[in-house]
View 1 (tube, rainbow, N blue to C red):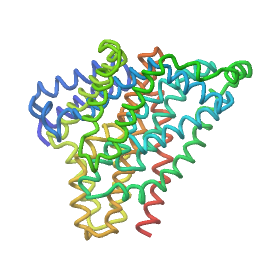
View 2: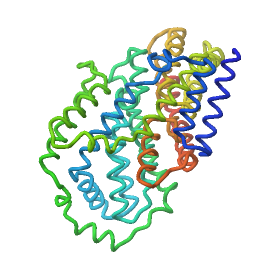
View 3: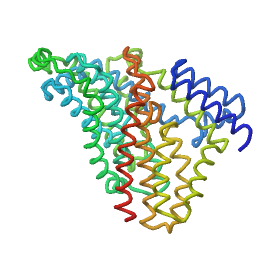
View 4: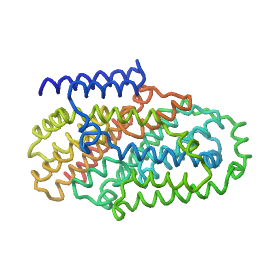
Length: 430
């Protein structure tokens, strides 16, 4: 590799260390790292701001922005208080039942929508219900972030890396349902069990608070029914447009921004009120992260690592599948899985062709998808949903440290990836 490539690796590792140790704010670390990448010419303005392959992913940024605005308007209707009371009453105030209910809802919604949108909707509910029951909110938020990544693995639209894989591999929505969804159901069952093991010390049942919850009428929480119906109609149209992406050909970011614009224009909510809930630090953090990772792509670092893995397994489909699954999980734990998959997809396409390009070789696409999606759970910055949840938690005065998330994420990733390996081997290679 060139001297600039080695420098870019040093800058990235330095910024990542600062994010992990929280010596400085993660936004400052990401922006500082991005600035240094530009300073050493590891990337340039054109690549950083305008390149689809190595620049800031504006689709992700504007998808988040649009959905944050919609959620901000919804918050004014009282719908989150309604859902909080409803969920707590269904769980009868029992903490573990409540967590199971919330993670199942999160996983199912993440399969139908994208996982970032799902956590934007579910996290406000979680804060409210945990406050009502005097429960620590952090375990619930961590569990929901991980459930969103597992659930999003099931479908083409559930996780952004899957969209990239489908495009490069010529795979359909139904392909993901047939090959990914069955294993995701199994992984969710296992994950529910892991939640009990990992968080059981936080499940403190308060009979008095539970009784108070059961006496509440959730319908009284709705403060503005007209605004609620307007918001729900816009949200439903946005969700339908997400699902119909293969037909409409509108990017999710475009749909989200249009939905946010229509909602603000058609209601009495002011622009200032609409953007008050936008997590600006989260958006800026993503921008800096994209620039740093794009520099690693520009200098050939990520491509070099990926190519070494391909060379080491050439002609051995079983070995290539297992290495791809493990390497994808490992790399997605330390770099965002979106640019990683964008880099690996052309290499996997070549590898599929080298192994005959038939149905058997398609297992490599599923290994890439499972590894990248599940590996995103390993660390606080492994997936977009993780970063969004941590950003909202910090805004609400309940910060989640890098290591607090990661100590649970490593366990979940190790278990889910370990279970996925025999699934891929027995179904496609056995």
